[in-house]
Image (cartoon, rainbow, N blue to C red; front, side):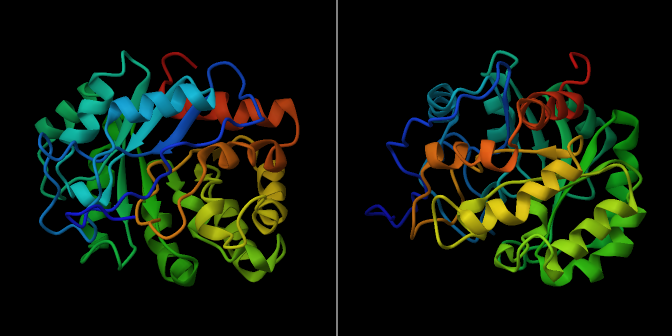
Length: 295
């Protein structure tokens, strides 16, 4: 939905209260903040111009959904200016960590400052509709330089370029987290070509993690997201120590159908059917990756 100035709102203002109650300490390990634009302007290269969705709104949603912590992932609309993400972490009273997007020319001192501000990973985006350039060789240089900080790399791509991505992913010297499972076609089911290819990627390294997220993006049939559940549950069951979950709030670019975050939370027990799997997905795994000093 757009306001009078053409800025997009991609989230519902009144999400439902989920039926599912997350375990104590649950982490929403994939969300974003937008602005506020007056304080943190959007990138002139941004492919979309959202309405403000700042930390106060994020924390109110977190409380409504029953989560304790957030991992704020730098949104493409802010480019490599990570101030909005750092601000969200700074005002969270220790309940947020973050993933940055950086210019490959970033200095070591700037990386150190990001670490001090709560950043624990860097994101490489290969979605052509969101970024103009994805220089693999320079990204690998960044990946080598963050190893000393104990960070990981988050990679976002779509299923049709997975084969092309394999040499790059194999060369990354730190743990890797794949956003949204590389966006498979979940209608193919758990044994479809996309999910088989993705499992092959997970099997290639024991330090590749993934976010089992975004049924709203991957399953156009909508709630209860039956195709998503059918395709993703076996992945959670077979790789229980390498999966993360997040809302993806405020759902960048989802302006046509606004996702209901309560309904997204209610998918969790469908893809992680036991209390043990739910605790790994929502507490143990994200704590190990983002708050290792407390895990």
